[in-house]
Image (cartoon, rainbow, N blue to C red; front, side):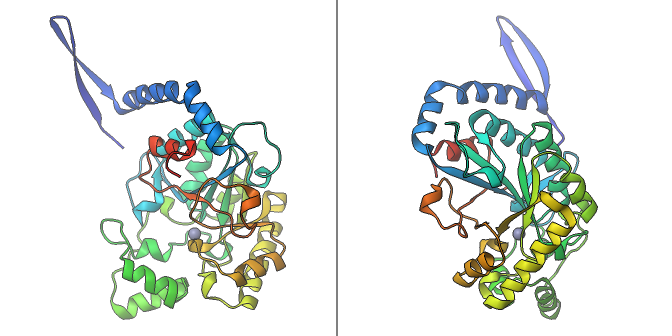
Length: 325
Ligand SMILES: [Zn+2]
């Protein structure tokens, strides 16, 4: 974001015009925030509300500093905002690898970070911000949709970056969230689509994903093979899909591939739970929910707090502390 803020500071009889860059203002806000959030009452409230619980955060795309909005806007957080979220999380919680979420406990709230869809901006700029802070995270990738893919929901978003609800529902529940079917329907129906998206809003290449996984603590899990709505599929079809994506990720990325799964669109079914257990996964994530005790939830239906583009640091902090979630 470009721009600056003009402030007039009155000191005694003199007026001094000070031009602050946005970064300076953000820095001041951050410092005040950090001071407040590190105060003992906040930590006490937090410990009481979330003791023994776990929180998994779901991000999607990350917009690089110099880029402007594209695709379905609600899915893409600015790099600066993402960095601010990470700084706050580091201050208030123990950010741990997803695979270590349920083991160990040093008394601090335990949080895992996930990034769905392997958007190029998340795999490059997002992972860069994580690595700067030595924070772990898991990228959930659909192998059949890597290498510059434009997802149908981004192609069908309108000029304001919104996807019409009727279009979304038809695509998800009638067309099973299958990219080829949604695009064929859009063509036949004369719906405007745009594939002219900037690189950050397309899926990463296999090479970009491999480079991200070189950083300590960055792992990859399965987001199914081709990002269909599993709730519409038969058991045998889901088993085939889940095995295929798991085998590919292991063959490609070795021990950087973990046996966790994130449901495309957060949609799942009893058949999906059985299929993932059959395909040797250890856990699966939905979208929705927040803090939870591991013993209170099914391993293949773990809640996850979705972090939309417009969630402020204060909003995320409130959910982290347990006030809103
Ligand atoms: Zn997804």
